[in-house]
Image 1 (cartoon, rainbow, N blue to C red):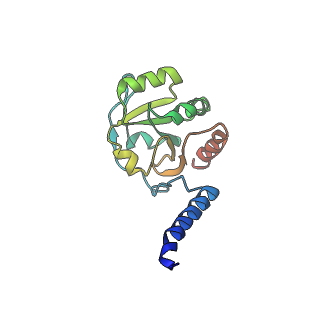
Image 2 (image 1 turned 90 degrees about the vertical axis):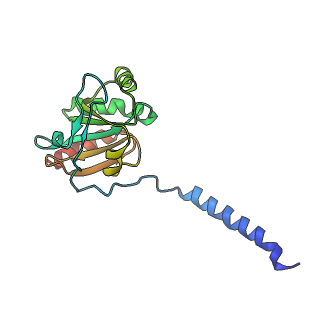
Image 3 (image 1 turned 135 degrees about the vertical axis):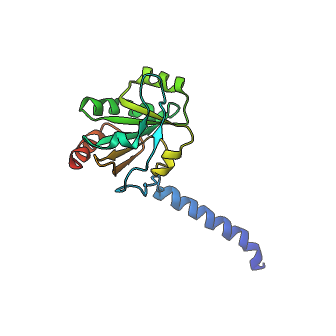
Length: 174
């Protein structure tokens, strides 16, 4: 038999082995922001919902460090993190939201159903700010110091075990 007949088998075994290796070793799911330890870009976003103001970079300057939460009403992990955002709010943390590609009525419904931990919510209808700060998806949360610098990025939903860590980070960046 000629060796050329073994090429398809060899290719199949190579790709099957590669797939098995990737499944066994997991994959890198988080895309860290290149903006950590850099200033927030200049931005101004209109309100995402009636009753709450929009936001801009100026809202992060002065006072205590704040959380910038990138989320959407259509995001299932955002529902899961809602109780943890409420717990952070109860601890005195100011949380400013950025609603990604959302409709005001959907944002309002989400807040009515799952609670509103936000002091402001800006509408990022084309994901421009999301991209500028290096957020790859929703939800993502950033710790912003009083000078307007991004000091920490939390990728994915905030879980109960993350609350003490975020509180400590907020205290450390005072």
